[in-house]
Amino acid sequence: MRAYGDSNLKRPAFTVLANVVASSPLLRPPTRVRLLRSGGIEIGHNVDFRSYCWIYSNRLRIGDDTFISYGCHIENREFVNIGARCSLANQVAIITSTHKFGPVEQRAGDLIASAVTIQDGCWIGARAVILPGITVGRGCVVGAGAVVTRDCDPDGIYLGVPARLTRSLDDG
Image (cartoon, rainbow, N blue to C red):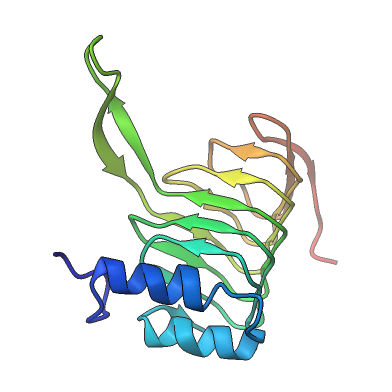
């Protein structure tokens, strides 16, 4: 069995800790954060991490003052870095892996993974999907239901499937 990240926990133990115990709605967010930290996830100060979230491994860093809402799905076979002061709405999916195209007998070929970065100050809307290898630039807004297939420039509003820049925001 292979260990993940910096934790000594093996994958099944991490899965139970993160996706059964820490995901429980019976826990308050500060208790959930302490449990996730004990599993090797790097979580900053004043992070509000809600219940029913699913996390693949401890290859995750969450910056200070970030809010992770109910039911988010973080498939982090590769590293995911969520910056400070970010807000992820209900059921956001962050995906780090996909497959190469295989032969006609099985089109889903070998697994490949790429890190995802969400820089400081971003707001990711409900049920948005961030695909492998993406960087969401500082201060971006990704609209509800958007599917991010390309990097997002800082301070932009990205909407749609696939997500496209619809407007740039100023620093104010």
